[in-house]
Image (cartoon, rainbow, N blue to C red):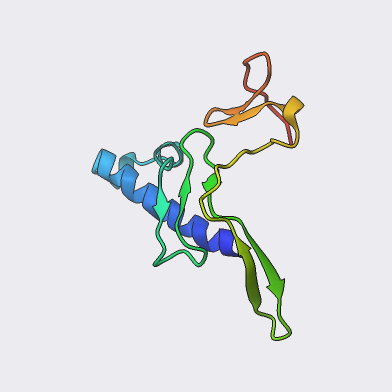
Length: 117
């Protein structure tokens, strides 16, 4: 649920960056919004989990991992939080799948892989 909330802000900030770049809403495309979203930050005052930002190399999120304990009232108690933000490493548990980049999933041969899902 939180990711959906944060993605709405990432989209908003990406749209604002694209508008600043073009100056005209008619020239903004979905690809342009995606391309300018690297580096977009959602600050502490908006993000429930604190500052997050989008990695410009693979368009995944930098965040501080947490371990929570569910309480009887349905809330969560944070029992551990990383001291620093952790870089996203998509597909790291599937090293043979390739490396996730801004251009797509790149295989060992250097080519962007298609239809990997």
